[in-house]
Length: 359
Image (tube, rainbow, N blue to C red; front, side, top):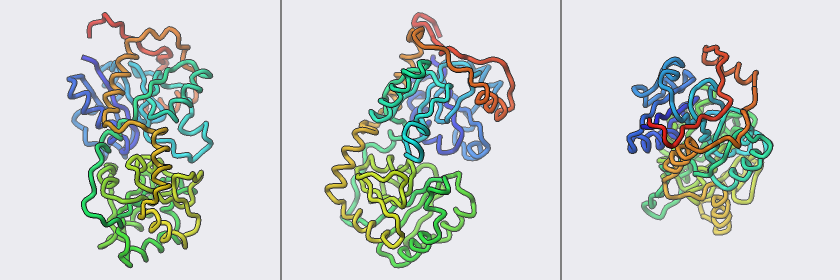
């Protein structure tokens, strides 16, 4: 009876942890949640199965901690497994951001060849962790992709990141353009905004609610992706999620535009770009297919099962080849300050459960 802990920091982590939670329950393994922010606690659908304090986690003594956050308390018992809170959004330098090694994790369960290769490279420089490619748990709900009813394509899902200099949600000219287009009625818009965006920005976009514009306050976005024909976004990791359906994406001032997306830098070109994307141009669809084979080639809906299997396999593996995790005084202090729990205890070696050990 393995004991798992799913650790998240924001409400968008629940759709990432949920498929794993369901997989673990199906296998009759014990599983609890731990949430470290007020925002996520207010939107927690698993409150009855959530540990509320650090003391409860320590008493629970998980064998494996799966985390969709950037850090995890080093003083929590168990194997620390990174399952990621998104794809590489390409907001920053390619080798930083998504690929930053913070020294907290024993195992990275990577999403596809493009992430596996980089983390394998990082592992040579920081030999305190291992890497196993599994696919991303959040995408289990994406597959199989339902067939669209009817032949009409006019539904556009608008999604935005929270980083102000990259977010379309802050652009007044674009807001006015979408308002005009929604009133015109050629397109039908659905919108989701990042939970970290300011409330006044959310309220402004919500004011467009009408026959051709639907605002959705949810982190369960895959059903909306299924409904949408194309996406309009900026430099958000949700783009990669949407692309897995082999549907076109229009981006507004993407930080690093690539051939598989349709990027525009001027609001005046938005309408033309949306119409072009809705035609499903064969060249773009081909480029999208090539792209997703590199970022997430798994379309069987079983990435959560692979994550669980990989974690258990690594739990029992002899890890003497790994070095100690770095001291990380500053980062460890920040974790303790955030949780209000101060201890000198720190697990610098990955937890190993011998194969003949009874649980």
